[in-house]
Length: 393
Ligand code: PLP
Image (cartoon, rainbow, N blue to C red):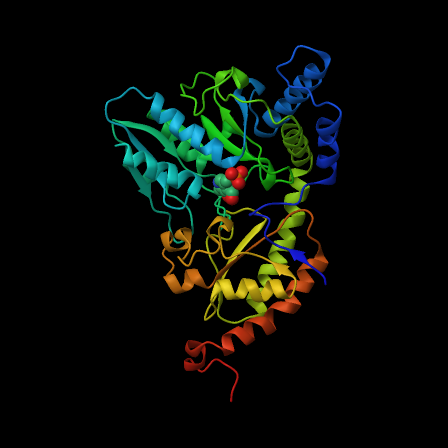
């Protein structure tokens, strides 16, 4: 059976070139990068080369990049690291209500420790207003954490303006750039961020490895204690093959960024316009301009998202009802409710997320398959029938 993968915001397939770059570090060059012998030095050299590649992708210095186990750890290390190192008696953090749980749950944990947190709303366009960030600032604000691209909607946040505000008020600024890195330009200088989280498996690298950019001079308490790895910022024997894979994925993303974004963006637009044109009572969630080229999030009125995902999966198309991490939960997406969608609209929304491995044939297949599935599911909906929109009889 043909299978089409349109859930690339959950994770992407590893690029075969990335896999080939990693292979020697799993089988031949297995040394510990802290060892002074040849085996160790092979690993050390590979790690430092990967660090250069990641730094180049985000316009940082390689000394400002540390490797972690992924986006979740990078977010935790940045948020707890800054707040715990801050010396003020009372501490306040600003974040948004559309963050990934890797940030939101850090904020909730901080609240339990007595830290005050402001959760900014996003507009119905899925975008946070920088003026709201400025209004939320207090004398005890120690950190602003606003994501770059939202994982459910793909909407890209106005980080340059928020970065300017953070700098004017001398407040550390962290961004979760897990969804944007490798897909659109990410430049730590332009964005004005002090800390930035990224994760390899979102751009064709391996799972379980990521990085945190920490601007030189940033005062941060480490999350973990152990050896002196990663400039005392993150102890633990390095995941050499994973780091090499991240480096290779970063290099490939950098070299092909513009062309990939254009091609994938065209596929996404064809899918989106095809759905809106062929299926009535559908609406795109979030701003259609300021968003990743890879993502569309669409509400299909009168349809329950989980059932829809299962029906599509049975016909060979993999997509998602929102954050992969919330699959199985009956709660509507916190992102869609935060931008003002009703619980019903949120429950009827589907995220299609693409990558450079998708083809025109994938889109044709999906567009042919969707209308009958939607019609069948809607025919089972009493609300749809009551509106007189369903098939007669
Ligand atoms: N932040 C965002 C915006 C994400 O989309 C994800 C993954 O879905 C994460 C953080 C977590 O990253 P990881 O899976 O590498 O821990």
